Amino acid sequence: MSLHRRLSIASGAALLTFALAGCSGLGRTMVGTLNYETGREVVVRVTSPSVNGCHRLAPSGATRVENATLVDIQLYRTLDCKGKDPIYLATRTADEIVPGTLPWRSYSVIH
Image: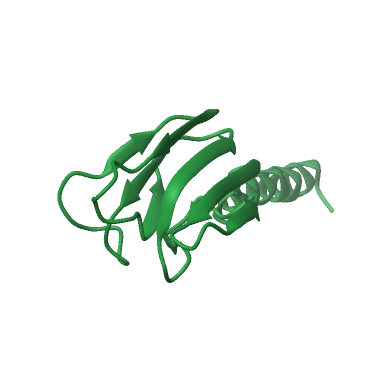
């Protein structure tokens, strides 16, 4: 086998390795815990949820959320991470709803 062919194969293998490493972010997590209290005063702890998609909270919703992860999130009062006026919750902070308002029902990661 020629030197040129071996270098081409080695270069192709290296490029494939880098390409696959770039796709490995598809399974990334938030690293840490997201803690929330439901409308029924039950504390829920979610460990390292995915950074992808919309995440639903408990059926009764959340009245207080503590973001002890390494990423920022947005909280929504709808089940599908849509709607007006989402609440921004930075990493290592907490927030709770104003009495008399709807609970949060979903969240998404800010990329």
